[in-house]
Image: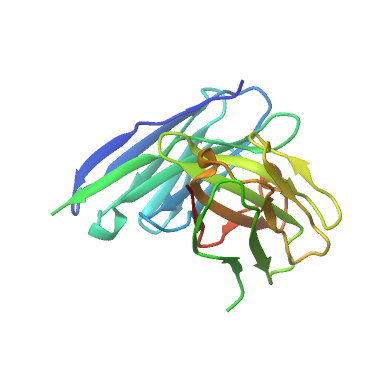
Length: 110
Length: 115
């Protein structure tokens, strides 16, 4: 089957930079999403990468390497409000449905 | 404000009862989805609809049914609720099917407890 792997938990300090990694199976891969989900809330879209390279959106950047089956989300100048779960999802397979990772719970400490 | 609305936000239900979770979007998106989210299991797709009049099964469809009579509405029905259906349910929509790169817009979720 198709698997998405990402770390379960991460901790970082306010103002710092954190990188959240995601690996996926490359078979049939078409693109990769990152979503943010605060506790008790719905996921919200952060980024979608189809081509190799880094895409920057303000404090958040997302990187993709299709050949390695690897992506990361980079969060700069961390703020307390960035404490959330970050979900990686790949767009793969013949049925083109999303395959979701279990999420990385990020705690930003003062 | 345009968006996607779910109801109810929270419900406690006796096992064996029938329950319908409502979902309405006003963005004229073609595709709609129902997910359940459980601790340690992540988001799992229950059913989806790529366009009005069509539906498909996701990863965990058993015990659930959906209909898509029009573009805006996508109700999820539990015919006879069981405790294992206790979960947070999210409805989502996208202009393109998520598997084709469409950004998903999620409703606020419906927390369902089956006793």
